[in-house]
Length: 284
Image 1 (cartoon, one colour):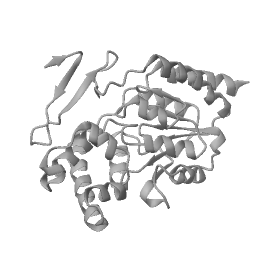
Image 2: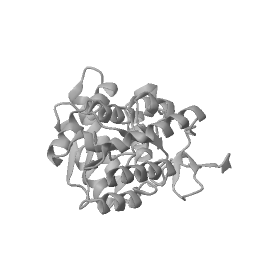
Image 3: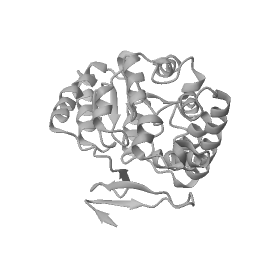
């Protein structure tokens, strides 16, 4: 069923047929969430002005990546798993949660936050629920995970520049390692930093500061790729420019977290214009 250049992937009871309202991008066959993420004229101008913030990083030392929604389009799988399991326990009166509620309440959050939303005041029970949900996610992700458009291109750019790189995520380690392996990136990253293994997870800066420490890189010569509000806040709090990916969260919410600029995916011309300027600054 086609409506306004979008289509529906159905979510029946079987997890092998995931459903999400998606929008087809002309440059790729990969679906994207249709959440009215078209950049407004004003914010587009702000992005153009902010791209120059990368030039001050020269010579660049490191690039840090979030995982969910940044390396791969995993959010539809998280939404399905969480929606199904919340229904089973009668959350929200047994009614399925909406995409908007998922984005506002759960996207980008670490396990402890999710646990207390589901079972307020009962962290132990909540964490067991989260663990079961993540197991369901991993079963689906094992054969339904796709890289974001242009990921291979940006990977090649990072490798060709000899940059240090780390994955920094609020996801459980088992999830992060599975996704990174399925994407063929196990040998790409120098380190994988897990939010729950730090003193504070995102939106605190601790995970990104730990990544810089392990890589022996300076915040003044590194930048971040992130797709969530909490992740952008963490990168900014760690003192680095953050390039936001508008893969799930509404653009106006991402902009409130103060990214350097937003891109749709790794083939976005704004990204490559900024990287070209960064290369020029490094050659001076």
